[in-house]
Image (cartoon, rainbow, N blue to C red; front, side, top):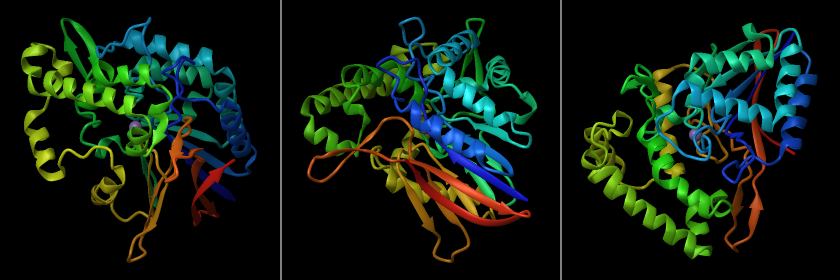
Length: 344
Ligand SMILES: [Mn+2]
């Protein structure tokens, strides 16, 4: 008997506007059809940021006060934009033993709303074979998006919602509020440049992009951090956890672009929380990473994004990044292989 777990991350489906960075529908459909044809009991783990609720305007405006109604509206917009993808996910679930698990990432905290989960289950059918959580675990494998070990994007799992002026809102972390209130402007002005990594190469090639980024960053630091307590009096969603922030800067400095530097530490934290697995898999940082630990007791994997993103080479060439997925294969309930693969 075969059993497979497939994990992909950071698809970021939006509503087809300039903020929507997902482009290659044909390739994602091809992937979903391939795993649907795979024999055995198969689980697809959509490892966070499957949907880009965060960078999606609600009726042409951005708000960090996200009600369940707003999230439901956005979910419907995503359904209407990508009907074939939801059909393909539904076809995958229609095979008897298949399951889909949604890990919640920082672009899709909206999936925490019970009615949004219900709506998505209804859309895909087979509601008993669909689950939502921050992590996916079995005996050998731990999969999580990576937001919960990222200081700026971490959601308070004990308090995912807050009440403000009688309305229940998503308790978004600092990183989401910063994007929605400040950095979304950068995306609006430089939708293409924002999809080029590493960031410092994009800044070198497009000086206007860099200038705008610096201007927005200064504004965010001044208004969103330093004087936030005056600028946003009484707004609980804009609260800055100052003590944690100072501690974070003390330990890690102000570096926020070089994700590779953070990865080892983040995996260490995850291994501590979920010990003794054979594989730890993350997404979130939009890069490919595959490491066997020195004592060979487990592998650490990061799957790259499925949105359209470019890697800038040292000679300033912009190359479309490959789409990657993790594949864990069991035979007669024995773990056989753990792979990080390109899909083309
Ligand atoms: Mn993310």
